[in-house]
Each structure stands twice: as structure tokens, then as C-alpha cells.
Length: 165
Image (cartoon, rainbow, N blue to C red; front, side, top):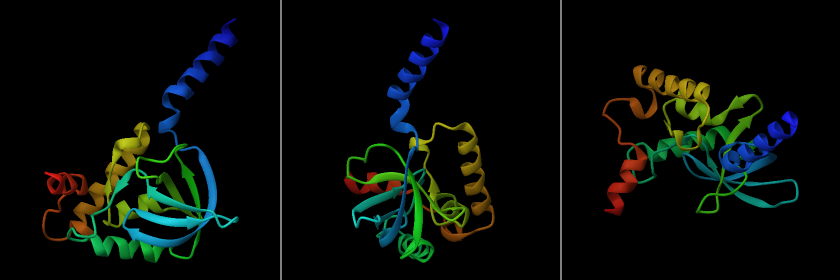
């Protein structure tokens, strides 16, 4: 009876929180980079997917440092084979939210670490991950890397909100 209860509990947790777990895995090739956190990939069957880097938010192209952020992501992944670890369902724009790996390099983390994106905790339920990514952002800021050079940058989510109002 105890094992049945544990199994039911695990199933319930999976149903309730499964949307926030990066589980689906896929090996793909990056074919187009749109901005600092979004690109298109093709799989081995030539199926095309639009990918949004999870846990980060990069400046919009119309925002200061937006073009540089896109160029950095393009430099890291274009025409390269990457591994994706994605949420099960796409977002409201049809993009799959993913962690992206080029061999052993976590591209999401690299964009934060080099100052080309902010940590964005919307899908992050892992305390260790929150601490690590916040720390990477703080270090990039202290070293004046990327968007942290000079002026105080405006977060993309606030920039988008101001454009809607």
C-alpha cells in the first residue's frame, strides 16, 4: 500500500509540475538565429523547430545591445549540431523552451556568463540552478562583460512591457 501511495504521488507531481521540467531530448542542427535567445533548428528528418533558450532573456534587437547578443548566439551555434533538453509543450508563440548544449557547453549559461543575456527564472524550479545562474549574472556584471559595460541596461521584459503600454 505504501509503494502504491508513493507511485501515485510521483504521478501526481509529474502531472502538476511536468510542464516545468526540462525533459525532452533531441539532437539538431541550428539553421537560423533570430535574436539572442531564439533560433530555428532541423532534426535528422528535416523537421523544423523554433527554439527559445530557457532560463535566459536576451535584449530585443531594437534594444541597446540586442544586435550584439544575437551575434554572440549566432557565433556560438549557427550550423552546429546541438543537444536540446526541452519542456514538453511549446510556449504561446510555438517555440520550444530548451536548455541547449554544444558538446558539454551549456549555451544558456554561456550567454549569461559572457554578459549577453539576463537570467530569467520563469521556468526554474531548481534552487541550485537559481543560485548558479544568479551568480553567473552577478559575476558578468562585476566584470563589466557584454551588456553590463557602461550604462545600466534595461531588462528585456521591462522593455517589452513599456512598448506595449
